[in-house]
Amino acid sequence: MITDAKHPTTLKAESSTPGAVISWAAGYDFLIWLVTLGRDRLLRERLLQPAHLEAGETVLDVGCGTGSLAIVAKQQVGTNGSVDGIDASAPMIVRARRKARKAGAEITFELGIAQSLAFPDNRFDVVLNTVMLHHLPRKTREESVREMRRVLKSGGRLLAVEFGGAAPHGRGPLAHFHSHGHIRPHELADLLSGPGLEIVEKGSIGIWDLQFVLAKAV
Image (cartoon, rainbow, N blue to C red; front, side, top):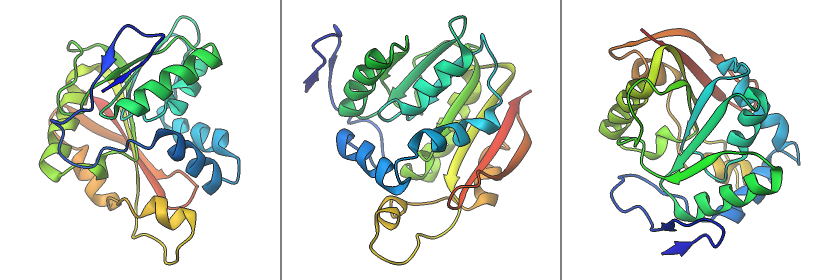
């Protein structure tokens, strides 16, 4: 059990989600900084680029981790837009809240699981999930994508980003980070081709072998 002293919610580690849950929040941020050679801000911007965020949009970051991507997304949608983030790891949510306060970014971070989103239908313009689906078993991935589609507005956008190939050889920090898993590009496209979704764009992020698929809610 972890309590965020500046937030009234007591966070409990999520036990009902299958797959891996990362709890080493501070270490995760350091690893990202290390593998990007200190250019983690550039990585976040490149990850968001295919989403084509616009001022005033409502955004949900599923598997938000320590909140870095959500903070950049909030800066892009501006004061008239809103960003929510959910993650199954309590330490990640605690750290995300602290980072948002430090950045002066008004973002709501809550503990939650991708396959059971605590939001009403047609709530968001954009749903993001970056390098998180591979942590889940295949059936749970499919359930999660259906949930992401449910909370999207008609015409809304769903962006998924994943490592597209096998982990590189060696013992460096990137190999360690990549070793968590990957989803082949055609598998990612198949996953986002379910009912109510239409793929509008796909390709490489341009960093490592990260691949993206952007789908529209129809």
